[in-house]
Amino acid sequence: MGEGDATRFGAEIEKICREHSLPLTSQRRVVLEALSVRPTHPTVDEIWEDVRRTMPDISRTTVYRILETFTRLRVIRKVCHPGTVARYESRTSRHHHLLCLQCGRMEDLDDAALDRLALPGKETGFQIEDYSIQFRGLCSQCVSPSDTGSRKRGSQAIGG
Ligand SMILES: [Zn+2]
Ligand SMILES: [Zn+2]
Image (tube, rainbow, N blue to C red; front, side):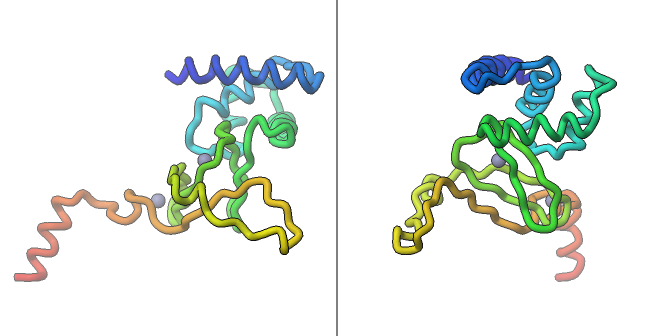
């Protein structure tokens, strides 16, 4: 499951580590692979939990440092939202996010129109490198927690 992706990501990591003369230790490899097979924007704790299955002795600090190092190298991306814990993702190409305020679930959103927004001009003196739009609300599971069948029956009872 997701093994092909992990292998491709692994080859990419090896190349980037070589470019930055950064030794690709087994700890770094395992942490990055754990991230690459999770499309769900995991937190440090979630990645740590995965990694400990193969490396029981690895500390949370080590996992955190590895994630921060590769975020700086732009191999992975850190997704931060006010009031929520930082999450990471292996996808670094431009995309946007749907954040559920109830369960904290974060989904990727691809939208060509959002990728082509008119950006603030040079007069701001600010040089924009990248952007990502975050939509906050309720995910499909939190909007209708019960199955649609019982909802229909419920509304019929009220209407009649
Ligand atoms: Zn939700
Ligand atoms: Zn994402």
